[in-house]
Image 1 (spheres, helix red, strand yellow):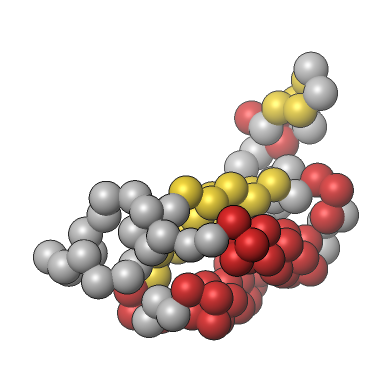
Image 2 (image 1 turned 90 degrees about the horizontal axis):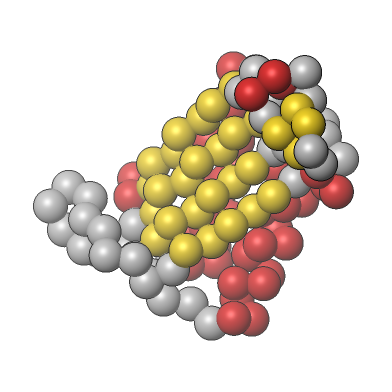
Length: 115
């Protein structure tokens, strides 16, 4: 049920993409306390994007989970940019993260919802 959706204007190799997917998945599972087999991570690269009027490397992440707490969001706001910066060389001040605490009844899986 936890999800990280990364959009960036940086183009990366398949090998780096696979490595980044794995890192983000592990971090999201750890930070939310949810089993990794419920975590989903998506990466869209080489996307036409601007931030602050420039096309310098940037990233936008959507981070959603059932029961996401403010403390978990704060921890992820610190940890996710470190992963992105190390992997993609994007400055932390060029990364936006949108956090959402989704009610269980509005998150579907396996033909039903969690609530």
